[in-house]
Image (cartoon, rainbow, N blue to C red; front, side):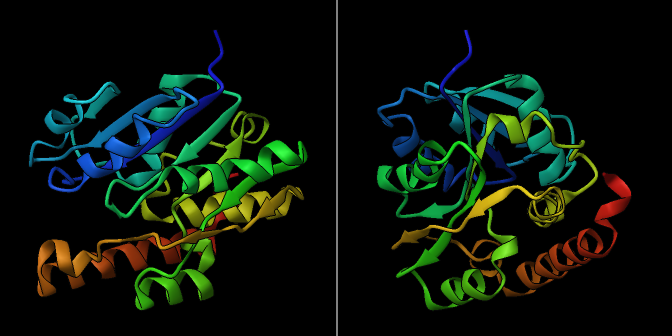
Length: 217
């Protein structure tokens, strides 16, 4: 039976943080099908996820966010609506998921919602405001997900690809505000030097997606 909602949560080394996200998602009233995609973690992320009533798949090595989402879509198959969430969110509430879904339900022509942080941390709020194409909290209609090209190549550039593809195809995309929601920075999770290096890797992957996304349509 086709579920009404599937929630995909790609995760890499998020064992200390994913539990607070799953606490909220697992109590969402739509009783969604919830899938954590462990992207080659080495810190026990999958073990933490399995403490919750969710499905968990583990990739044998780190393949990147795009590949994790692609494996999640393949695993679920079909759902009336989809939500993509990061595993390191701070202050996730049920109303944030409502906010991502509402435009999809109100207008059947809406293909995707891209959540914009507001009222959380100033640095992440500004990044979402001016670089919304990078935002990872998204709601998607099944007609859009079913027509997506393979995402496996895109790594951290997956959000850019989703937005660029939707724009090229003429799909309607809404950008609702997610009040008081934010996430951990790379530097806060890994320390300044490792976090900064990881951020540079993320930017490289995003730039590749920005300039070469059409090669993968």
